Image: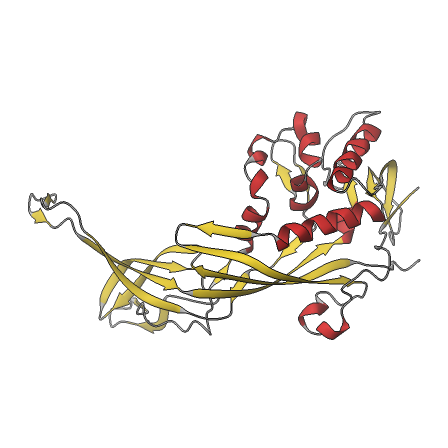
Length: 324
């Protein structure tokens, strides 16, 4: 069996800066001096639980006080789902309209080739080659903030007809300056092959006889539009086999060549470098992206040994499939 060699993944480390909370977790039930608080808004905190681990005399699980948060032990983060939404923001809602008859338009887009998609009606799908971790805050500049909202001077009536003040009090856990650290990876195996076959339940779209070459040409034209000076190739074949298999059962599909893969990798990294998120009460922008063209078997080695990474490709991208 021939060993697969070359760049197997493109891993990266992201440093981002910002201010305030980007990704809220919503109202969280807490407790202060025995009083239950239901209107405290919390950001997403890694490893945080609102339970103290103790129980009251009546067997109720006791909740933490809003001020009982160690932002170093339970740091704030922006979830990878939030990052993905904003990374592919231009096409964020297009997949609502994806159907079998227009899947070629989806496939020939950065969403189709990098973000991935699923069409529930036909189960056509493309697994995303892009792995993203959560963006975790390193500074821990969080604090408890009490707020109030004044209503009308005229008091409302409750169900019993009694006067109720229309002024409400609520609280939030807010943040000041932020610095995020995150890691990610682009899988070359998942990026380079586009299945057009339902045999292994991963068809990106269903094609009829004679349509494969047209689909390949459309994918190739889109990739070339990202970098017109280069000459990418998207090659259709009726039987692509994954290297190392026993029975050499193949699939109808499209294989991207080294040039096409490199264009998509560069475009994905460019999008990451230019990523920024603006919210009403916070913002975040990417400051730097350190890249490792990883030709080893050590996944995400950039996390553990930055001295051993390849910041430029020193080998071709690995080829996982061959035509037979």
